[in-house]
Image (tube, rainbow, N blue to C red; front, side, top):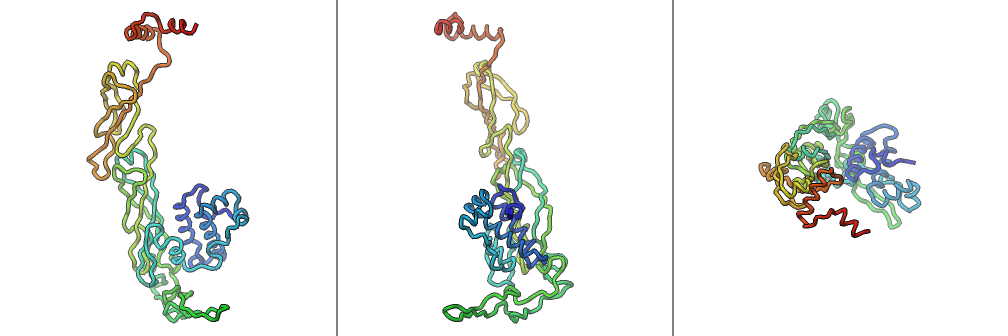
Length: 372
């Protein structure tokens, strides 16, 4: 039986965005218009079945528990979206993603008109301190660029597309369908040229007549100080190249920040816990704590209570809109009662007990009297 996760090259806990990205990449590889291998059509249909199942929460849950047979037994259609055939790759993407792969875009009626390239998404993980202070990151993306060999024409050695003989260059043909109600004639998109009116008889070997090719690109990205999980950055025209001279799409970078073992963040403020002794709480103290800017001395006021806070102004996270403005470092006080004390400490605590309660008997003696 087919493993839909293996077909798409994703893990079993993949998100829908990861499944979309995987299908989009694999569809480019195995679409029969691009890949002339004998098994390309079969693999492309398998991709469609895997995508359709894993993007549907109910189907995916059934498949995860019972496999492909479980889908059939539950009454689901397991033929996939391409059982009866499929259009060109652009039509597939328009059908599945609305022409913009999740970030907008519109379907063009004229296949020869300039079309904007698809937007792309990249998830970028940062360390806590990188997100706080900003960082320069080198990233790698796979996107479509105008083929440098044919300059986007799709034709080999400077050849030009030729008029489609099937439709006479109009891009449409007349099709008659026979039904029980009679014969119906309609104008449909030419299946040979897919509405362009021209065909490439001698395609470019590098892009296989597509005019664009998948290329890995490195980019240096400046991450601003103060970003947090969910923050988004847009890099204009770093998405897929357009079609017919259309502008390239954009690249969206979505930030994910690793949690810190020491700090908790809330907006532009950071929180840490400080354990102090009862003596420090009663008398006050000056302690050294670790901050985002290094070690700093903090004054603990006498008489501070458990759960109260001490703030270090301006030692938090920079405001992403105004980096010169920073939040606070909030130190939450925890008064830690010792579980074991020395004989000297016992004498001191006994003396303190007598002063505070006015009793001269020890706690131990008093407890014996209560529970004898």
